[in-house]
Image 1: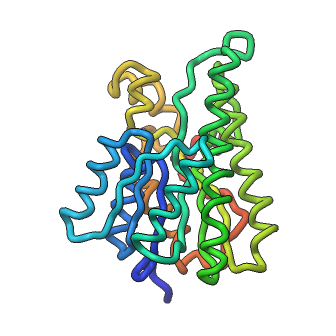
Image 2 (image 1 turned 90 degrees about the horizontal axis):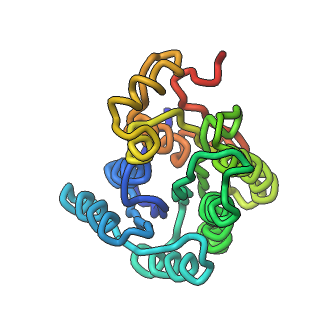
Amino acid sequence: MVTASLAGKTAVVTGAGSGIGRSIATTFAAAGAAVACLDLDKISVDATAQAIAGTGGRALALSCDVSRETDTRAAVEAAQSAFGPIHILVNGAAADDPNGTVLDLALADWERVFAVNVTGAYLMSRAVLPVMIAAGGGSIIHIASQLGRVGAPARPAYCASKGALIQLAKAMAVDHAAQNIRVNTLSPGAIETRRLVLRYGDMAAARQIAGPKHLLMRLGQPEEIAQAALFLASDAASFMTGADMLVDGGYTTT
């Protein structure tokens, strides 16, 4: 049986400064990977890398705006210089989206969500793919959402961008299967992170309002998403590509 080990692998994780991205980075490191941790917030991503180093893992903290091609290329070059071939990419960076219908959202807000959520995944993939192909293959994971499958009120930019990631993964899976590169999306339900506090005001309110929308009657934890990402990144998922893995507590079931 193949286990979810990342020994000898190098991973690049965007949005690694907090929440789901930080949990994925630390979980990958615990599974044996060297991890390049990318985030716009240098202080928070430094903390992630320090946490990994504190447990004996290997990590590199890099400040990166994934919506800028110069940043993404520089980050990938730094990761490759530090750790060698890159085998795993997790596109987890996401812009904060304000509530509002398409009539309410400013064009700048719409464009920023797509620039980070979608164009960021494109630019990171574009930077990593040549390195990954040269290494003989790998796994790319776009962090989407259950809201990439179902609609939510006052969330058009978020829903549309996450739906776009699901389709991007499918198209990339078709294009790069022959190069031994698997591309999947991972779609969490509502997870207890800073983003929920921003949306609901505090975590207690988020638990009360959003928790019951899931069949399991609770919010998810970042570690639960990280374990799913570990599976997708590892050889345990070697026959899985072009798929969207829902880890949403049953949110989309009814």
